[in-house]
Length: 151
Image 1 (cartoon, one colour):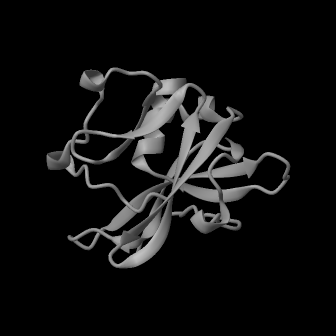
Image 2 (cartoon, helix red, strand yellow):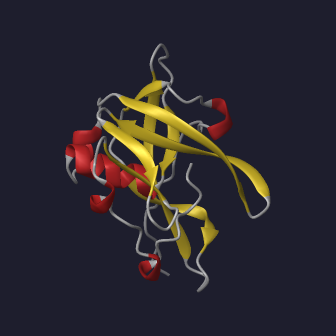
């Protein structure tokens, strides 16, 4: 039987409930896709996009799963190479919501000059401030736009 090395995620994870809107943070590592604890309908492992995060005034690096809205904003603001996201100041925005009946706190990391809004279908997106409403992107639901847990 052939074995392959697997990379695991070391360290403590941040919880959405531990963060407050307005906190400043930076990513301290590149973002990498990692298997999550959840499975797709076909039984394959779901993936999550994980980075290390550090908050202003602390030295502790914590793991964070970046949601699709945050990823799209980072790509728009700093480019598609995640090493270019390291060290950029981001503002935390939290939102209390229910997922599958369970109360959770969604976490969005907002680059300077960007804001979180809802698209025409009600999905959270992060766009440049002042973008006219007719230029807002929309989440493509047909391509699996249903977002993972946003934390």
